[in-house]
Length: 124
Image (tube, rainbow, N blue to C red):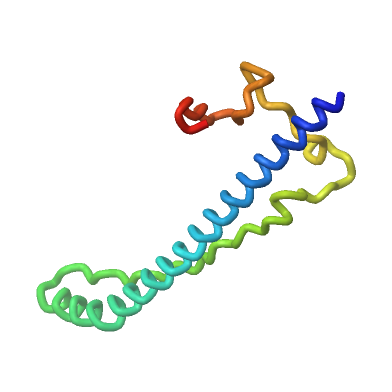
């Protein structure tokens, strides 16, 4: 029993470290998405104010269909919250709030989580 508690503690720490790393990656991705959205919206604004009026003047002169105005992207990504990721809210006990299920593992002594590749012997 004590050995199982120790192994659970070790795996819990490994999982927690991975969650922290993944949360940091998501936060960085969110910042980059926000910057990309701002850059896109700046380009759309420039297109709509500087290029579109001249293009549509030409379209009127040559009897072509006018070019439509572009719209900004308004969505701003949410930032992940590590405490929410580590300690999910508990509800009224419905199935969604129950304990996590055990992943299928081919070898109970294997410390790797599903989807991971074991390290080569040289790196262990």
